[in-house]
Image 1 (cartoon, rainbow, N blue to C red):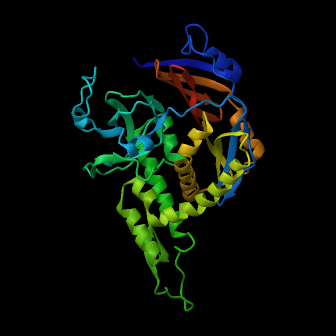
Image 2 (image 1 turned 90 degrees about the horizontal axis):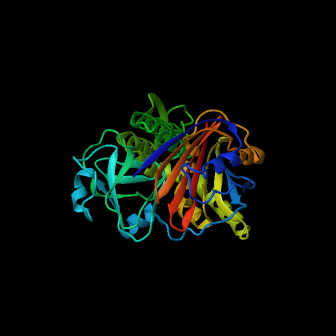
Image 3 (image 1 turned 60 degrees about the vertical axis):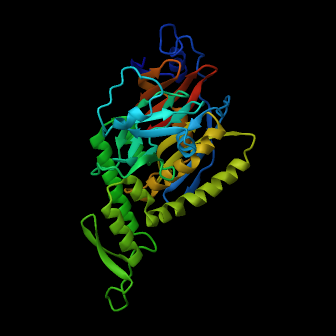
Length: 400
C-alpha cells in the first residue's frame, strides 16, 4: 500500500541530521540502511551559447545499476507497454485489485512492465501517441513483471483528443525541458503545465525567427528579398527566410510540445548547442576515467537552474542524450537577462541541502521519493527500496 508522510517544517537543520532522521525508529526509513551523506565535486564548466554544463563527480560509493531498465529501453524492446486506461483489459496478467478503469483519461495512462527487471521512470519523460502526448509526472520504480500500473501523467498536447496512434512511444527519446519539468513536479497542475508548454512554444517561435539562417534580409533597395517572407510570430510581423517561414507555420499548426521540439529547424538550432557540449563533455569524462562522473549542474544564460545526479556513471550515460537535448532546448527558448554563475556557485548549489520541509511518498519494498524544499531550491530524490538494492537512484534539484 502506498504511503505518504509529511515530515513537517524543519527550519535550517543541517543536512547530516536530516539524513539521520530518515533512519530513526518509527520514521519512513526505519529498518533501512542509513543514506550516505552527499559528497559531490563540481568540475570546470562547458559552455555553448546560452547553455553551461558543470560536470559533477561523486566522492562516495557508486552503485551497480545494471539491473534497472529505462523507459526508452523497455519501449524499444517491447517489454514495456503503455496504453490508455480504457484499453487496460487487454494487458491484464491477473485480476488487479482496486483498479476500475472507465475509459481514456487526460491525466492517466496504464503501464505494464513485462520484463524481469525493475523499471525506472523519470519525471519529464515524454510518451507520444494515444489521444494526447503525455509527460511522466514523477520519478518512480515499477516492479518487474508488473500488473497494469496507474501511471500519473500530464498532457503536453492541449487540444487533441483523437487517437493518433494505438502505440505509445518515447518519440526519439524526448525529455521535457527543465521549465516544463519544473511545472510538472512542483505544481502538479494540468493547467499550469499547459500554460508552460504554450509559453515555451511561443519562446521557441520567437527565438527561431531571430536565429542565424532563419532571420530574413532586406534587399539593398530597402525592399524584401525574393528569398524572404513576412510571417506573424506571437502577434508581430517578422521577416524570415522561406525555410524559416515554413518551419514557423509548422510550429504554429501544432499543439504538440513533442512535435514543436521535433520541428526540423528547431532541432537544427538545438543540435548546434548540444553537439559541441556533448563532444566536450565526452572529452572531459574520458580524462576522468578514475573519477565517478554521475551528473551535471545546468546554467542557462548564466543562471543556475537545475541539477540531475544519478547513482552511477552508467545510469547517467543512458539518460545523458535526452537530458542534454532538454537542456539545449531550454537554452534555445530562454529569454531575459544574463546571470553570473561560476564554478563556486555551482559547487554551492550541490552542497546546499538545508531544508525546511520534506514530504516522503513511498511504495514499501519498491521505492521512496523524497521532496525537499529549501529557501532557494526544490529537490526530488528517488530511492530504490528493492531487496539488496537500497540506494538513491536519481536526484533532481531545481533553483527557486
